[in-house]
Image (cartoon, rainbow, N blue to C red):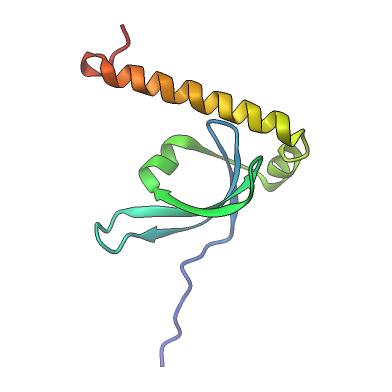
Length: 108
């Protein structure tokens, strides 16, 4: 009898471009489109929770950090960090919206 191997790798830590801290678990394949997805957990500054997103988005928006860096970043003021992440996210989305409205995605 064959032993089933787990797809979960050792967790690693990442920081989102907006500033949140996350723990990556594994890459999974979507059953319909066969697109690879990241399986990860939000750690800080908002409530922890599991998520998935396409690997293409993961690679664009997340940068690897060490566990020590993640631990250090999570020692700050949670409320201030939430405000900073929310503000950065709004700014990034507005810039993306403006880029999408210009010809060929160029800013005017």
